[in-house]
Length: 302
Length: 302
Image 1 (cartoon, rainbow over the protein chains, first blue to last red):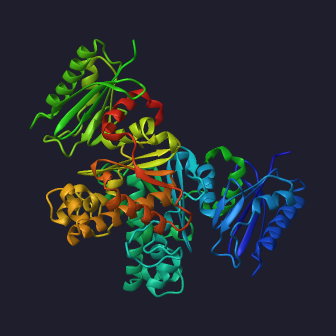
Image 2 (cartoon, each protein chain N blue to C red):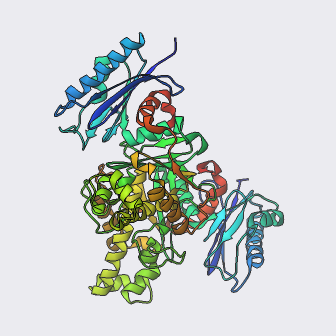
């Protein structure tokens, strides 16, 4: 019988769960809405029940559980320290130990963008690029940094928070409190607001149809994304910058200008060899990353 | 007989050379002016003669030569690609192979800031900090990045060019051609110019005596240095930011504001545990780095 791993992608609106094998095949999946207004214990119980339910369907228990969480999680302790998009406080919640007791299996939790980066490393374009920076473009801007084949996490599993690079000194105040973060200018909601549309999809189609305000919103977003990207290339000279998340589909409006900005701004060495492209793990990147947490813990530099 | 290594620090005005041992003791040193107007061959011959002369004094040949060069050098090929502060063109000069033939020993060349970072890793504060970012503050702003005990170089030995981070979009044009580089705002000459003094020493003492223009020049320099520093902490969460070079002595005017900026701007995780301090290798950091090139090649991630 094949070894199976459980993977969970915890989001503000839904919780996706899967059982998968080491090759990155998701064999059984289930998605439920995030219980509205629920606190940590109810959400963690929902996750445990999903794992039980998938195990019943598979007729087999997974050997371990990995969870991607949209916040600050210490991989070493399994402690969730901050989750901005869930309704209740998660400061200091020992989610890992709680689920290990409940499910009787090892549980690893990590920030969702770092999870997606690990998924990309194993199951996406990662194998082509020993070192790469991943940008997850969506409601927020997250990231992860892979150096010489291993995900860099740092002492609090927080390295890679590239959405919170200051790109415009004295710029708009970010949700984190710092003025001029990339996320405050180039995230989906920031672009939609600047464009005057309810969401990025409508802003993008307006920009493509010639709406000057929407075009300007995307030009600005791409300009600052280009600065953050060029600065990371200058500092790390990775083999690639990879982009995931819904907005990474906007190749003409975001990725092509970022490619140009990297070539333009990095002048100390030729940077045109640095690939700038969409990530390869696809729409299941979150679940694949959560799977990778237990399939390849050796690819995480702690 | 103790194994000796030759180390050379090539600068725009002088060439320092030494023989040292693996423990980082510089046993014999010699410094000559950089031959004015000389081309690559004359300068490389001067270096070779220095090594010969030091060998005679020591009564012993070193086993290898390391050279720090203020420019873009590919460590793998020994090819010098760009040296802005030497009078003649060094584009594509095979300095390593030339000196290996001439001296009949292995020769390694690397950018001087990356050399200093390696020296810090071996002989300075490096042993305390598994991961750190080094800023070399002087005429230019150079840097190096150590991750998990190894200097990160990237495919062209150019990673760590943090002086060329864009910190002010549409800011002053840098020597590299990019607008808004840290070096264009916070390097010694940029501060002196903004302060209205001929050099940073007089600008610093004017600032300390209450000259408002000099104070503003340092506040601006520290503000943008703080942005670059905070962005690197956000991306990499290193254990320390270390500062070397003449300007790193200006603790009150530069390092203390950078410490405050890191605490202020990094809000996704507590960054007060990241040390912000002067490097420990001291005034011989350049030579120690060139020594380290051959003492500890295993500490270089290529």
